[in-house]
Length: 299
Length: 312
Image (tube, one colour):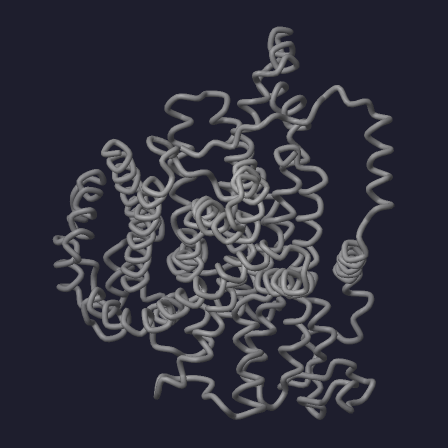
């Protein structure tokens, strides 16, 4: 069975020392990470203010300006990134798609973390048969490509937005479960957990208030690493026509429909492709950097 | 050692039982399996025959065992599209998929491992940086975007290679390149860090301190030890190849198992989906078991234990 046991961060570090080292970290932040954070802030701002900043409604058609060129290819400023085959503004669709894709990725990441951490804690608390069952489930989901499982579920149950987000939420749950179980088992051996237990705290209090905060940094790192994978998974499924369904739009969905016009209007596909790639790249750079800084299992 | 191999076999068997159970549960949850598998407009006598064959008139636990029997005797139903046996429908697509995945896998290994080792041996050199940039890009550019960029460059703009279909071997180049690049990037990144970790060990210092030429240190000590974690990641890469085939075959209209899966999901041809999922799962479990056993052979410390988890 898979073990990820390691020591939790030292609880005794004084708050002062910690906050100064965080500030120091900010000063020593590499340029690349600064750029990555700026890009992600930009994406978040676009997602939040999507309705305010998009020049048109994302479904609004302009049939006289179908497949018009983007500005940098000699098009007009009326449609900065050009239009698609129905004359819909690519920039407006891009903005709406960014919001949809980020929303799905956030939702799915949180669902995955909640499921995984809960099962990991359950395994660590009860041990024995329950633990073996959780570990067998972990083995099972690590053994099969998630894309294939997801396709099977979509085939049997059909597609809806809620089902789709929940389904993506199951991506990477086994990693959180593994980490949460390992860290909870080692956390329970520490004095603070035994003390809280002896004081008569319920398991909810012990795991929720004491063990969870101690392993939070490792979990946040795992979430940062899973986030771009979910963006890629969502865009892959939507690209295949099996994820987000029209009239809704997501980044992968835009690339998928842009594929038909690859030779005549490549800008339809290039804009969302660029956003997917750069966003995934930025989140994973940030995740790698955070892991080097925060993950106590590495030091 | 025998104990180790047996425990791996047992775990593989448990995984396969869980996969079959998963398909069973999902199938039951989605409605009446007979109409789901045969299609709503199937003739009633065919549905009756199916109910009998799968024992759908029996209690659930008997159905469960009957399902196992059906799976292992290869009776997975008929395709909605042409009424043919799904096992035959899926098997005839396998060679096309292998024609892409096997060369891509060889490229992954032939490019990824040497690039990773070279980068680690020349840390912080220009080539090391190039390898790392490629490796990170390989992760962030999803295969469908890479595939379409390749089509845009080599088919649309340059007109050198065909963009879809399976008319000649030229059609295979772009899909293989797409799948080869992604895996090679992942493997290079992983090999590099495995190699760097080994190179920092004290036995490497000892070996070079006792006067061994550097090449001997690398060949005899470093490479063999770095091989251990690398084998693990190769096992996980097989899963990535399968998932990659699903996407890449769809982009290039390549008539393999992956495209069949996507088309069947879109048409809700569930018997085919079920057969493909079971086949992929069993292949993956088998491959992972082989990796586990290889792991035990390469690393004597691992006897009786599991290989470590993938990072993250």
